[in-house]
Image (cartoon, rainbow, N blue to C red; front, side, top):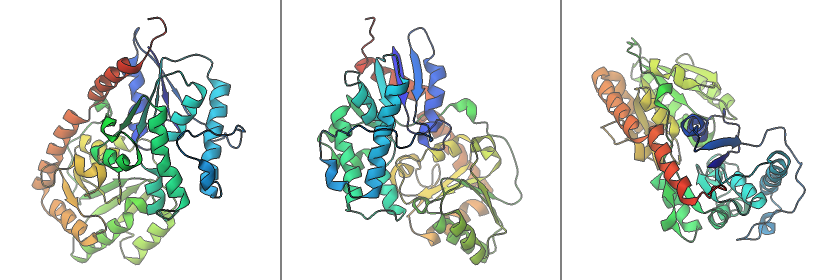
Length: 378
């Protein structure tokens, strides 16, 4: 079967898609399966000229918004790039971004499309202060879920909580299937280590949606109480300068290291002790599974897919979002008790290996592809 994985960003970009899709090719490499990847290069801008078609709503109602205009232009750019670059047919397309799925279906209307929705762009924009809830951009972006349902043979997402989030926007929420991201266990190599000072790590894009302001407030409280620690922040984004200034104002800049973007943080993640990320929203939270496979203790906010991965007090600690005091108290527990920290980390590692293995995801995907794929030689 000839498969195409349609991405939006290049596969080396951080995020849930990059944690799984590039590693699928090796698992599908056989006489029975042939898999390619496709994405839109960053240099492609303002190339598409054709009028976009949406089957389930009139996008012109929102056309006055610059954000909507940019989104639609990117959509037609993707169509332009497909027409230019794809010369051979595929038996099935699996898209991992709304733009990728809609564009592929526009060019190849007869090819079965499986669409995974990995996250909510509109929710991120709201949390990051870019758009208003209920505004034209929010209404446009949330309308895309129904459009994706219309053009797809199967709509997928990565967590039960995100399936529930999408449900009000589509006609058949009961048909959504959940296939969680899978992780290649060979990438993660927990190592025995003994850090005299507990090492905290977080990995994310530096935007308000990730709640790093809450983390810095919690760490300031830890320092006030006399706890030693080092906080390692891996990632970059528009909030970096503001967060660095906040760390200085709180008096914790010496305890905080800003690394910027790092391509493969899982290579050195096992040498830390505690992974912490108080996101304000998270469809799945792939980085928690990656941290668990690195055998770190997990501390996260009780939102979205994070709360599906962590059972509070069993394989990590959950705290309410927007609550630096609760986060500080949770961190205090794992900083002050190394044995408890180890027990949480070990249990998290066991669960992640059992539930989020790439082998499990591959098996589920193969069943799905055989259900909808139509090999030309059959």
